[in-house]
Image 1 (cartoon, rainbow, N blue to C red):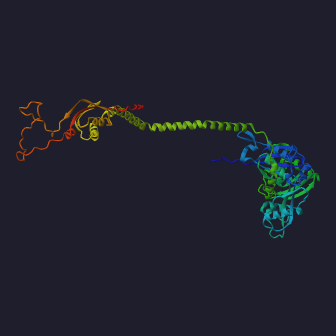
Image 2 (cartoon, helix red, strand yellow):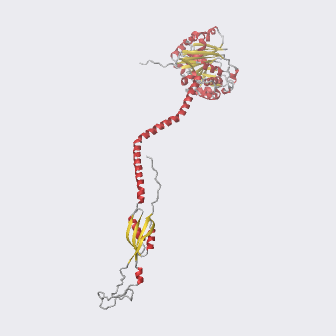
Image 3 (cartoon, one colour):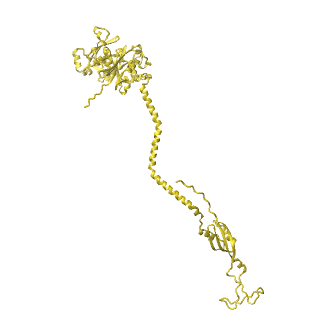
Amino acid sequence: MNTTMTQPAIAVGVEIATAQVRAVLVRGTVVLWAQCEAWTAGPDVFARATAADAGPPDAATLVAVLTRLLDAARVAVRGREIPLARIGRRAPAVHVALSPAFVQVKRLSGLPPVADDAVLAGIVRENLGQFFVKGAVPLLTGGVRRVLARPATDATDRAATAGNAAAVEAPDASSAETTAWAAAYVSPVVCDVIRACVAARLPFGSVAPAAVVLGSACRGSEVRWEDGAMAFAAEYVDGALAVLQRRPRGRSAEDADAGHAAPDRWDPALDVLGPEGASYAAAFGAARHRGRDPVSLVPRHRGMRRLAAACAPAARPALRPVPRARLILAGAACALGVASAAAAPGVAAVRAEHRAADALRALGPARARAAAAEAMGVRAAAVLDALAPFDAGRRSPTVLLAQLARDLPTGAAVVDVRLDSAGGTLVALTPHAGDLVRAVEHLPDVAGAELVGSLVRERDPTEVAPVPVPGAMPGIGPPVAPPMSAPPGLPPNSPPPAAPDPSNRQAGDLARVTVRFRFRAPPRSAAPPTPSV
């Protein structure tokens, strides 16, 4: 079973009197710290027409005194005492009790019988001058707390009221009017409290009259309290104010032990402060009360919202030295940020390098296959380059004969063609040898041609050779033709056919010509670059 219990919340209680300001730090019912500082309520507190008229605080103003007290408060956290502002979001709230010099508390009678407390508080606020003493100093009211129309004056009524606390708070429906407690606060003092809380970086809790909060610090039901020239006697029912009487200081002998001189009347928690514990009763009561009474001023009150907005421009504290630990922490964070920014590009480059290396390792097999294919291509290219000159030096005989047949002159006939690597020899029958040589020279692959050997004339088969006559002397007399028999198909003794024309025989002569020709040298191409494997 888990027996761990949450510790009570911490609260700061402050009493603002006419001559002193006291502050206590309370956790539950235990006083953790207490301190007092002298202060005199000068005319500047009451001379301000509005709450926002305060100038910058000096060492003697209420804002400066409250700020010093709140800054001096310490609380133990994990064995080390730290200022309250260092706690953070759980910083304790500040609850203030005001002396009768700064607040008027009255039991108002004759109020209209309105069931809504907010409406009743608005009636009191709008008719402030009819219920409270209103001078040049602006006043601020809180809520109202209803009471019985007939005050409890005797012991019987007090006992009955003590047995039924709800009867004190409930309105009397049979009565034609309403009675309620209300309070009017000096607005500049409340503004100073808000400014001090902002300067000390602590949340504002509440502001209440000292006569209201003392019921949370006393043992009995009666309290007599004095502050300077002012004193009052109050009676409480279950800690709630029931009767309040103002009286001058030292009015009777009973007042000799009143206020701070009767420590046996207060909560035993104040005994840890020694003989001065009774003087902190109002501050202790404010920390215990924490604005429970409706007459208190709390942050959610509508008038407090306007006052806080008016005090905000003046509530900005002056610059204070930053703690060394915070400077070290900020410097370490700044150095870490600069180092991270400087190292970020290098870290990003290393990560990119690792990713690229992983990608290259994944492409390793494919790269090996590509390199092998490239090597095979290089070897094939080298073989083709070696075969290219041989292929360029070869010439097609068929193409050469086709070109020769196309370009031969008319009447020429090819008898023989012999080819070798340098050229060839052409034997042809042609009536004109020069035309044949020129035709061979104009072939695309031939660089030059020339006639070789002698020209051999070939006889026309249609030409008749002379026949010698027997008995005749050579060279004497004309040749006599021998008798000829008639050609087949002709009658005997018919005349012979006519002899051919000598000019025609000359035109039909053919010469056997031998032409030697040379091939052109193949063009030299630049050697291709050898690719690297």
